Amino acid sequence: MISRSLAVAALATLTACGGKKDEAAVVDSAAMAPAAAPAVDASAPKDIIETAVAAGTFNTLAKALTAAGLVETLKGAGPYTVLAPTDEAFAKIPAADLEALLADKAALTKVLTYHVIAGNVPASQVSTMTEATTLEGSKVMIKVVDGKVMLNGNTAVTTADVAASNGVIHVIDTVLMPKK
Image 1: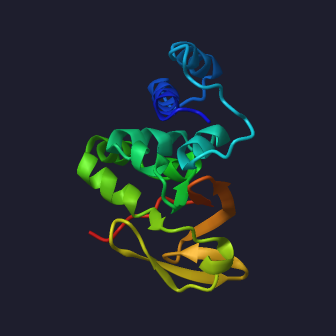
Image 2: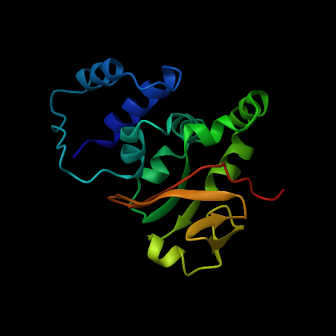
Image 3: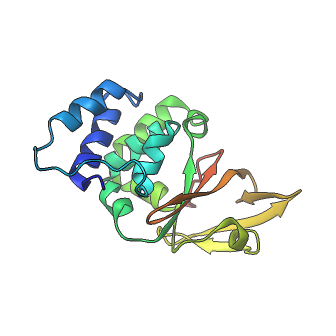
């Protein structure tokens, strides 16, 4: 299993490279690991952070989680259900607003924890719910419309049940914003 420090280093390297997936940077980070570090077992279940980084479509989310200091939390035992906005979802936010959010750790933490539900909540359970309380403390409203799970009326779950060793990821098409 990959060590936490190695995974965090790989995530930090990815985000330091402008959020672009740079395989050489990850290899270089791994090469800097102590000789006693365990080998990475590709068949071992990955945690939420490792799963998201491996997907290659959550670079902005990875950058935001790093800026908010939430990487270690989502590498923890959990379980967690993460409503994960893609890079395309983050691109819907005007660039100046996104940069301001990334620079405001308190606001960023509020937004990101609004995307996390305690426990492992698979799609089969989500589709029967009308709301879920997030780690941020507010509720996300849930409704099934034409067979598609919608959050807060305007955010669609585009891919459900991406398994991780410490929970599940549901991919969403819009960044959720908690009420102020």
